[in-house]
Length: 200
Image (cartoon, one colour):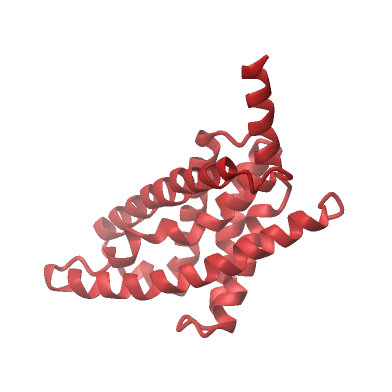
């Protein structure tokens, strides 16, 4: 964190807190979705189709700030705040958040934190999905599912991570940057350089 500026730490923390509330909302949304799918024998997919939303803050923070640890720490902060505001998942949620953050961080680490293209953001969402599924194998009883359901739920989670975290995360970040509020951060500076090149 020595390379970090105070404003970057503050922004990452804000992202973590804001998305903690969003994550908690989706927890209840997923429960409702699960109840709807139960009569059709599709209950295991209730959370899987939206699971990627729980990785999105790691993608947004990393894409905007572009510093080592942004994906991990933002996700961990979101997990801690969720517990503090009363998430039904309880304290173990902090471990889940840390593992998801590590999953996303792994994709950026593979590029030595130098590539923040859509492809890498999507890969980060998918990596977070795989890491979280591995944790869920022990913590959430995923191992009890039939082989077919294990493959299906894993694939759905990976796709959800790619789309709801990777693609949607980039889109939200770009929309924020377009307003000018991210001028002092890596993403905002990148956009400014592109505008200058186009104008010259």
